[in-house]
Amino acid sequence: MRILHIDSAVTAERSVSRKLTAEVVTRLTEANPGATVTYRDLNAGVPTIDTDWFKAVRLKPENPTAEQQVLIDTSDAYLKEVQDADVLVIGLPVYNFTITAQLKNWLDQITRAGISFRYTAEGPEGLLKGKRAYVVYTADGTPMGSELDFASGYLRHMLNFMGITDVTFVPADGLAFDRDAGMARAQAALDQIAA
Image (cartoon, rainbow, N blue to C red; front, side, top):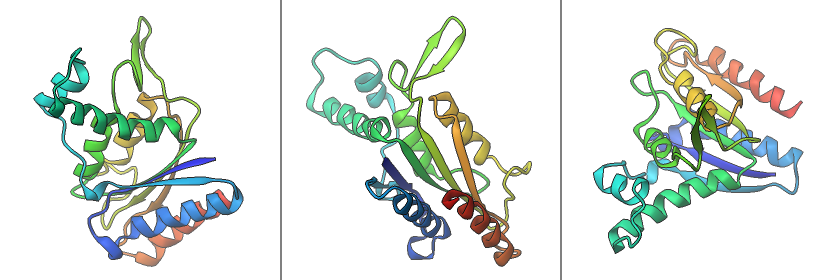
């Protein structure tokens, strides 16, 4: 089993999502002793896509400049980590009702026509099939699945769009109101992973 562990919280050691993603990875590696883990901390910075990125990565020039090659290599590296993984463990802290900017930037880097998805006569088809994702959803005041939650549905949609349809959420929500109850929800989901 090859695990890609992704964090995006900006709260460092105070982060609940970081603690819970680490726990998911621990449970997976204990159950699969030969598992390997690749760690990516998106809080270290993920470049936004822009016109230069579009010209380099999407338009695929025959002879890219040195600057364009850096953009291509960076996007390819993010995508290869996902392609190589059997399981993704993604921290989804909710800020202002949605995903972090870093996580959005990462999704923009890896959602590439012809590589992670393609358009067909029947509609789009995800090309990253056969993978499983565990998403740790943490929020102080945004209940997962509520009308205020613009994060979990979006991330599920994007993973599904790229072919990753086996998605399990580990929710720790409502932490500002009843931290114990929120952590209990997460623990119940963690216990299912170990089962």
